[in-house]
Length: 120
Image (cartoon, rainbow, N blue to C red; front, side, top):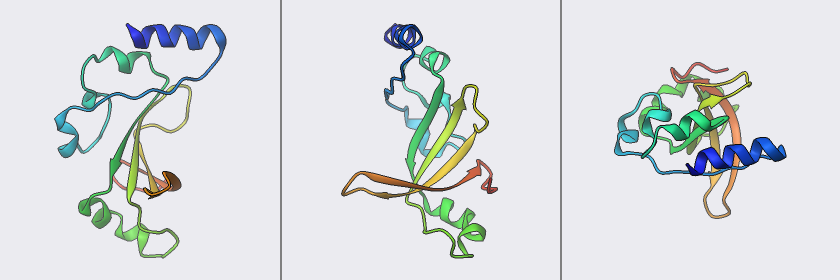
């Protein structure tokens, strides 16, 4: 009910509100982190205009990115943003690979790939 009310407020006043929720335990093994990993009501995913899941980069990710990283254009990422919903947007079902400074909470997006690690 809260997500529905927030969506109504956004539409009424033409504003953007960002919120967050918890994930269920399946996020650890998921090949395509999407709305199915949200803990609790699936209705939350229906109301949002943009949905993403922030994850740490695994050793398997780095192995799959070797072809992209070998040209030394990008630093090795330590954070990935799985963008699974982008209403009225061009890109969805992608990873946005980032370099994060966890001490200052600054995140630098570097490049994007499909869930199959093909660069966009």
